[in-house]
Length: 399
Image (tube, rainbow, N blue to C red):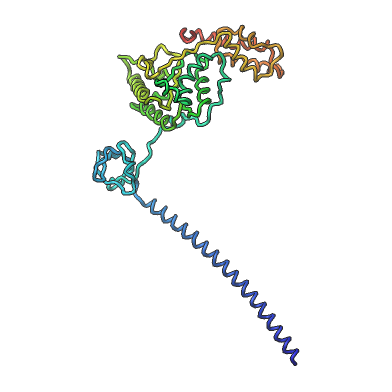
């Protein structure tokens, strides 16, 4: 009898333990469900807040863009909206007082014209697109025959950026701008790229014709924004190619288009004169028409150093040929000096064209090496094209 009772009790204990295990599992499942529900509730509340904020934003009235004219002492300002005259309005308490400066762009409430926010100054896409973030790949080793010119350019641009203490010790101001003058294809743009590669400065390249705009004041605005970008990205190098397109001499009798170019030139003159001593912004201009540049642009204080880059001599052509054929597969016995002696009067760009044309002639014949015969044929083709250009171009462009 006692044994039967014991067995019954054991069975009940086992049953209670199994129920306890099942209850613990159910409790764990319920706890997991609770945590999941809390997470879902938090996510839904967050989505709800985001949707409400988006709905409030869409319901808010549009803002008017205006400009700040003056700051008054009683937490009010004078603004000019884009649709009306000047107004004296209040300012949102969330705007820091330091951001309220005359000339700033602001957003205005449509009904009260109260200042709601300070907007960043716009930059024209033409200006922002001129900035070159990556360093140019051209180095000093890629330029031949311009040792003297490169020395002068490095003294005027590279040294003030990398070693400004030298000018402070000597007690002089470094040149503000450098003008590169010479025929097409002699390496003016190449030199500017090499200097930008050697420094940690931001390289901003602009073509002078891009500053010539259709509407009054647009060219001057581009010049201001260009130099504002240069100051913001300092240290920086601004390279203005084809400077003669915007820097031509001013004339007494001119069309409306000429007068707009002159306004752009006057703004450029003002910006060049406005830099402080030892500025970290350097200007490099390039032109093959120095005879038509305005005298005010060439005076000391704007373009302090004018570097004349002519056609390379035989030594310069030898160096340039050596640079280009070092990357080519050529037959043995071809000497850069020999190629330089038979290409009298060619520019660096024409020498590069001769090397490229010689390689194409070898490919045309199914060869993977370039012979001297290819260089001779390429020289005749490139120089013939150059002679045709000389017949149609002014003599000063070729020395």
